[in-house]
Image (tube, rainbow, N blue to C red; front, side, top):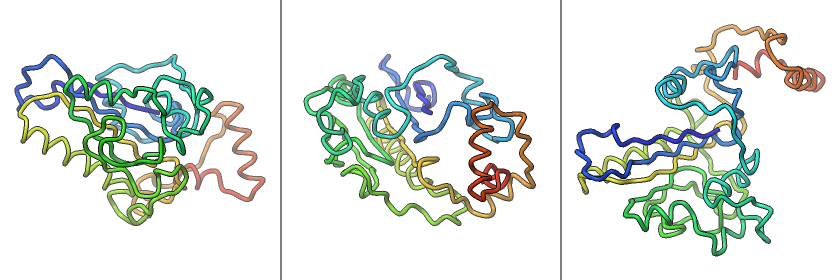
Length: 238
């Protein structure tokens, strides 16, 4: 699941003279389209994202180049299917294929990447035309996971990713007073094991899943969960 924000009006104080919009691309790794309240999930509480959807455009027919991390990122960055690369792009990068960040950089955009990388061996400024890098350590080679913020952090394990992105945007505005900029904000939720703090779990209160509210495919997954000794309601709450 991804959110593409054209933020030309979000920073009115900059008095943008250019017609080029600022762009913020938020990617929720491996998130399904049905995992948000605004797409019909009966239990999810996603008020901020629902507000974005209500004020923007909600896509209901779409395709991705893959359902997991690197394959989908390959499509977002290059428009190519990952099978076209002789080496898995998480390990080999995009070869000579031009990326969206390179194209924007050539058009005068300041570019930043914050959070999970997993699109090549070189997670450093200058790669793919990216000026500022906040990629997590260990992601460059295509498999390692950085130790994120403590699971009991009330702000959530990916708060540092968004802090870095906000600092990039604020520093850019202060320095340039005008656009445009582009920022990838690619967090780890829900790709990594879900381990929220107790305070976050408590926000959902007692939850008893009514399986009839879900599709037959999801009910099959619930049956597998129970067969393995899991508690569907507790897992859904987390």
